Length: 97
Image: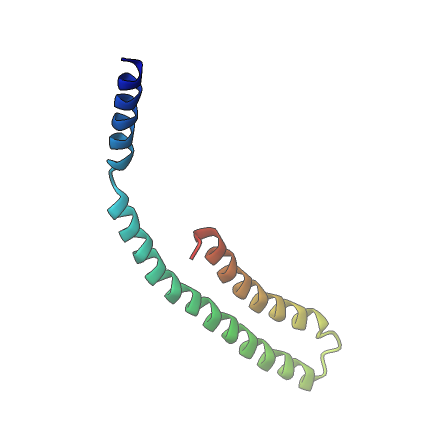
């Protein structure tokens, strides 16, 4: 009698575990997030490239004008581009994509 009760409970638990709602919806949401995230990652890399190009042009212009302190500008534009690249990598790690 006791074995029958234990095996019956195990069968009911197995049925309950396999009947989880929303698994298909969660997989669909993950696929949509993955498709939109890659475009966001590409956007972050393009934005980082634009920061690098614009920063290089502005620094070169200031250097040709003879501004004595361009070190801050170099660091600011460089770290703006690095931040965009790292933000994309961070989002990829957070969402597990």
